[in-house]
Amino acid sequence: MELYQNELSVVKRLLKENQRGMTISDISRKMKINRNSVAKYLDILLVSGHAEMVAFGPAKVYFPSKRVPISSILNYISDIIIVVDKDFKIVQVNENFLNLLDLQRESIMGNRINNLFKVFANIPDLIPNIKNALNGKHSSIETSYKNEKEEFFLKVKNIPTTLDNGEPGVGLIIEDITKQKITEKKLMHSIFQINKIFEITSEMISIHDEDFNIIKINKALAEFLNNKPEKLIGKKCYEVIHGLKKPDKNCPCEKVRKTKKTQTITYFENFLGKHLEISVSPIIDEDGEISGSLNFFKEITD
Image 1: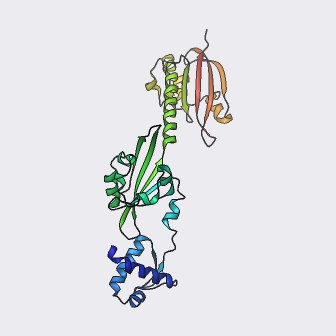
Image 2: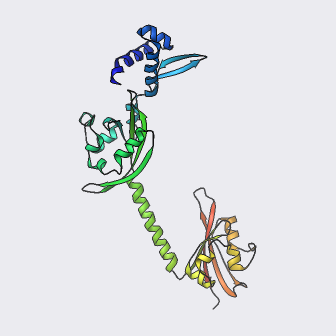
Image 3: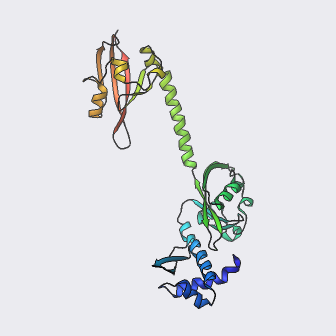
């Protein structure tokens, strides 16, 4: 490809000097070379983004590309961007990469990516994924690394690209997902604690969806109904608790659906032969709509 650099430069100069566009024949006459060679150079410029082509009937007219330089775009992206060539050598990085590792651009350009830093050596299948991207296959992996103070979590995307010289390359987009992972970990811990409380509490609790299906029920309530939780999940609450084929007109879940407010009722349940107090609270989704209900049952027969 290096053999064509002079010719490619001449073609780019001619296109810039002729903003109204040029055909292959126009360029061939100007450069005094055959049309096949010109077509080859134009294909390289099209692939690398340095030229644009518009068809006017059977004629193809070429123009200089109006693209924004990729180096300018990279510096406005919050992620870390690294571009490597087919030999895994770094040909482009953005400012975020340099700032993160406190490096100067000239000190790393041309170095193989896997020989530079521990963080890259620890990325699973770094070289195989780059090879796959050179063959046109996208990939995305998550990894982590520790320094002396803390642990970082990263998401690495390998994107096939074409370099300015027309050669294949790979863009590595490295996203810092540390905050996301910490939040997920805290959320999973909270869910674990909630589930633990849900199961060990003596309170009788169930969660129903907007269609009265029981989607979660704890052991205390299931035993009160002489059953097991796994046997009751998916069944209609009005069938299990009230022995009905449709919601009762005084059903607190139905009232909650209409008012979006907590409802508490006390009554004698003929189906169970028990006096009950039922408190139902709405579960509101992010759009402000009811997605289900949280239900607390208490036997007050005594």
